[in-house]
Image (cartoon, rainbow, N blue to C red; front, side):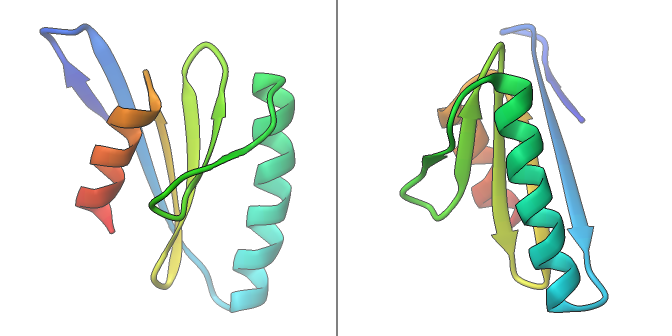
Length: 87
């Protein structure tokens, strides 16, 4: 969890590792449904390969090598910067 005091903005990063590629695929499919239901918005594909859902904040999902990266941020631009540093 990151806190930007100047902007009073919170960013959460969750990196998940999977036992098998099938586990990763199953989770990502279920998480897409969760994010869409939580934000009441469709996924927006991102130029960096992620998918983001816009609600009160932004939830982004990325494939991250051998796992999955989830980022909640105040906006897509912030999520993209954080994702670039995590992948």
